[in-house]
Length: 308
Ligand code: CP
Ligand code: NVA
Image (cartoon, rainbow, N blue to C red):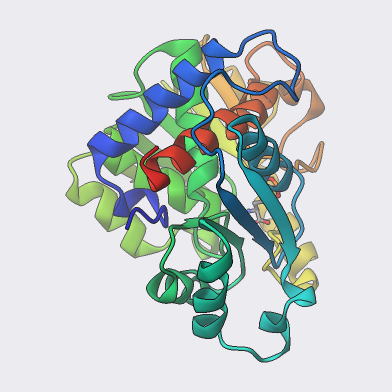
């Protein structure tokens, strides 16, 4: 069963095939209206459930559109409207849904919900973000980097800010795709040690540098994300903002990276908190290509899951 649960759980050769396939599918439909079907219809007769226990714009729309372009059908389900949100077990939900649909994509809080869904489903399960990781996002990010700058292998990526779920998937990708990653942020918001150690065990350089100006020296890509994630307590907002303000990505920080360094943000962004509008809308920013590539990368992920 090809579940897509996390980047470090997927074979590097499969990850490479997914990225190359995503790029090829993007090229193949360039210039067509968004609603036009692809020439191939690999998801013909397939039904996909998209479950959201947290808000979403990109994940929700890009999966829905992607499945339709490939000839499949979707149903978007809100966790709170399902019996899942009212006491039915994850295992029973997984077994029931597997009788109706061909694939389940879920965005949830606790990673255990995702892994239990995968354990009991008899169809592939895709991780659409948990409190711990966001693998579909980083597949789109790798595609985006390579589209602009060629192979990501051997490059230097700098993550500035909160060592959160998106940062975790970047660390997983560093190990699998072979790029170096420097984290810069306050010690209390470091990425999980387990993720850092895993990347290092695969032979890539992972550095923790408290000084953001030093961290970005020589960077090929600078990335940040919101300072308060959906699973973080709103009561922590003010403290987090105070801790993270020195790690805001602004033009002065970008000017210390390589002159052709790209800027990425998974979005949604809080303009002028974690990144200035000047950087977001500046010449090095590829944030909207990144958002578009969620569509192409996820279509390739779905094809890999279903082997179609
Ligand atoms: N980047 C991302 O996953 O966006 P959404 O929360 O809008 O899906
Ligand atoms: N770190 C953010 C990513 C949103 C796509 C969150 O989990 O809220």
